Length: 302
View 1 (cartoon, helix red, strand yellow):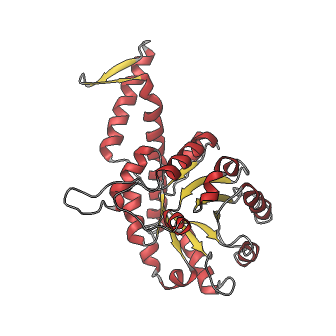
View 2: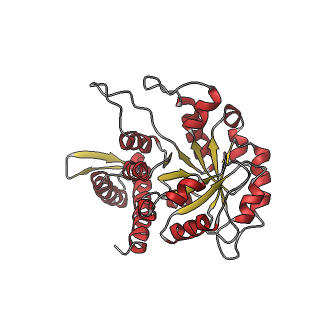
């Protein structure tokens, strides 16, 4: 994936909902909140319970700018895609991904691509040690792969350990996701670790998202609309950051036109050409976020 395409995909918050929760969550609680929804059929009992009201809800949410993914066991995925045929899907969230699984899903999705639309995509969910060990080969197994997501809950279950507020248990998975994503031009999703505050309170989801964004992560999984709002805020550059980058870009480009490699902002703060890529990346990302939020606002009539 080209850098511009990677930056233009906006999925700061990906809310995991099974069919039951989706059917019983009031639409206004979801609209304008999550950037993406993952219909989670991974642990659905007795097959794939996709009633017509669930399908109608998916179509309704997609109209309001929510990207739609489906997550299901590999063996159940063909049935799920057939039931969702015609629904506005963006792609598949693939648990326990491996190169063979990605190739199988790639072949399966080819039968559901809509003419004139972008190919259906694959989001790799890192929820097992095996997925980490083959991540480089898995990420390059199909051009449909657009993102790598650290699934903290899935990894904890696979490792059989409880969540610790004192130790960064996901340092290695997060680092692998970031490195492999950059190598293949993909997005990396996940949260940063922050220790408890001096008063013993836990860091907020928004605080973790802010630090994650500064590491290069571009979104994360969540379970509630309230969590989605926090992630959207944390993964969006602050107005102060955007304003600084615009000033820095102007003075740097002016310096380059005069054959210089550095400049100062308002005569106070020096910036140099080494910072130019970061500045342009942040501003392009901010433009994509504005377009996404404007799309949701227009759909909501705001």
